[in-house]
Length: 91
Image (cartoon, rainbow, N blue to C red):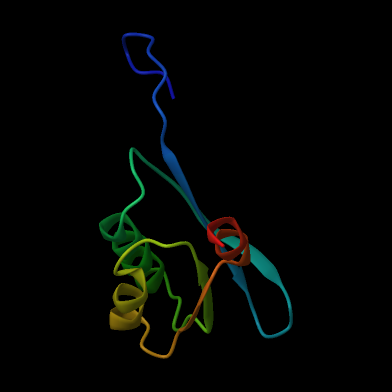
């Protein structure tokens, strides 16, 4: 993204994709933040809960510290797995 001085800055783009029991996919949100952090994810989880998401069955995540505990504080029954791409990259 370009700031008001014309300088390009990197930003994290958060993509929340939901898949229901019948396999229907829906983009629940696209969020942009200057950095990737647990606090931003927590705001996103709070937001989707307020918008009506009752449960997250499965979450594939990268290595953001504290994210697993964070999601489980809002959606306690979530099964969390490290993203395969991140696992391979780090091996």
